[in-house]
Length: 163
Length: 390
Image 1 (cartoon, each protein chain N blue to C red):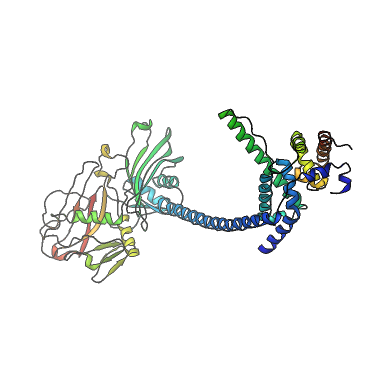
Image 2: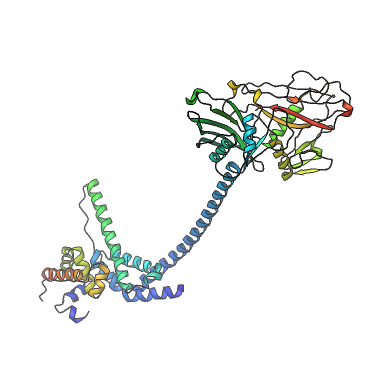
């Protein structure tokens, strides 16, 4: 029973860990934290496998948990920055991706609103379907499509990509 | 990346900028964390199980304690009411009132109210009914419960009202009581009647105030008290040998516990006779409880000996305990006397009485030995009463 659970989680891990961390890296703009959030999501998947395995799409659940972790991390960073700013007058620290990324791409990602960034990351880096993206973002499919459309338009504009 | 997604190369550019990920190394980390969490989860489940078990045990103990409190404190107790015409009338008219065939003096009527279960308020209503009053309402507005250090004695003070429909309205029957019960013995209640005070503004009505003095007797203490009185120097003189003292433990009474020359005598309510602890006999707890219960049953209030001014709430005015004295073998020249009379003075033949006066409550301790015939024609034992108060 326990071995089956570990085997099932391991199988999902090898299939989804890499795209998950990559997309989370673009969402959080922090590669290390993206890896932590992805691992924590897999840990939750393992602990709640009895329930999650019965879901229609456990992968969407996995991505949603990981995205929530990123969101919590982002909020914690903002709170800490505000506190620092209030105490020491220091400016809000910028995100450091901690991996080799083109400056132009990084700036383009930074200009994206968070939801658009999530939609684009899941679409281009995790190769999720619109339905899965909507499930991971816990929005309707139409809303996910709108976010993705606007993100692509903005990225094309920022990066000078022509249709 | 599927072609349909990346017709303009945007996806490819983003993919080129994605970080490298070493899934195999990270899986080792995740697997280790999974194992650690699994162990914690097992521990947590075990902790929860232990917690639930502890909670269940505590709940069971609490429920048991409440049930015990209910049993010993509020149900199945006996109300013993003092004398008086009203009481006698009430005793004869109530189906739940019995007058036990106990040796009584002419001035003492022992009435037993059996109140099985119910609340204390119910008990007071029953008392009012037994007294011949049609109680409209009863309430118990004060209830204090204390545990004695020994743990086996519970003392409580009750102050309640029984509202009575009087000739010109509703009267108040005030019941103040102080009682103690201990496991194995029923609660005894003695009531005293006196005139109602103007405290409740009903002085124009024929209302009785009942000062209930619920004697709260640890059986052992009660008998020891009786024995203490009985063993007073005047009584234990050679002319009245054989008075007993009970210094036994609660659980087991052995013959050797009785000092030489003294006797342990109990009144058996079942037979109405007095038993004497024979040599080599043992009285186990159940037997002792039965005898102690008998002793409580013959407790009564002697109304005439209670000054009204001092019969305060919750104080025992007087307590009469009947017991048997052995008749001395040597001849005596005393004349017969009424058992109801109190005599104070030194020993004069078979008639003896000891009176003690306390400071708090009307304290009267009387030990009277009565004989109605010449020594050689006397029975082997007769009733003697001791009136004591706490």
